[in-house]
Length: 316
Image 1 (cartoon, rainbow, N blue to C red):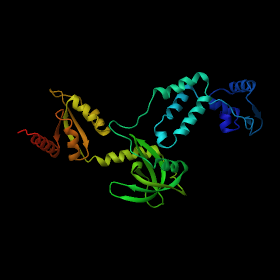
Image 2 (cartoon, one colour):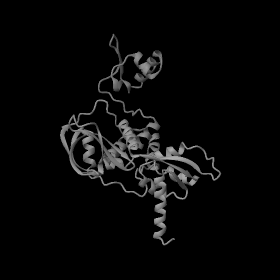
Image 3 (cartoon, helix red, strand yellow):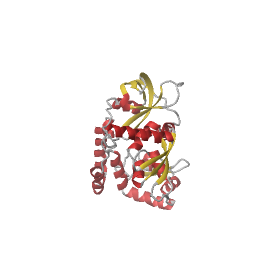
Image 4 (tube, rainbow, N blue to C red):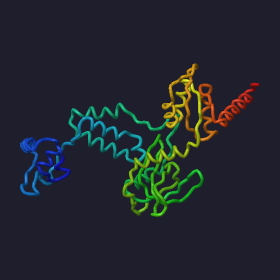
């Protein structure tokens, strides 16, 4: 496989790549030649071992675990959304036919015993009728003219697609500006795209752009911008469990809280909050397992909501 992918290689280079001695390498070459693999040697400064031109091995080179991993990547759902369902199934069948018979059952076991459902509970996937068009432009590296509906307005925009991200069942497009003076990449929710047309203009990708790194940094920026304050709480064990389910940032705060020292078993914890109104709605659901100590504005908002609820149901 090294000779197939890299062409002619010296004995020393092959031995180092395979982590064996040169003597062992020569012995292995002899055994491969005896088995019918057309390896030949060329002497001289630029010599080395090579395969006869046009010869291809029928082996995939995959280990059983690697074959299972490849079948894992072909799970249905996201591929179907991208319009690649048929291609993924075709590739899966071709790979399956090339595996040794003893490995096929193990490889197929992944798809029959593991199902991926990226959509959260009590939710449906966003309708994304323009996802195949967007995905095709991402693969081919061409710009997109789109009509996009943001929270503020609907705009016409031409962008340079850089990648697609699937998070919690929601598809996002990461795209740069069509020109060179409009800033860096931005994130667009694909379900908010009302129209999309792939253009003939090729995309100029930033030299060092990395999709995974961009996404991780954008999540950090989002969390840093959305949390505007903190709330000090007292929570029972059941309250702590409820807090952990609110968000990853709150879950980290709960994990960092000191062990309980109060006689009633409650834990003092400080969590990030978006706003008084938003935190009031979240923490109201966890009452009385969670008590707010401060800020005073949040404590007052909870008390006012309790009083208003009591009046609604005719309580004095």
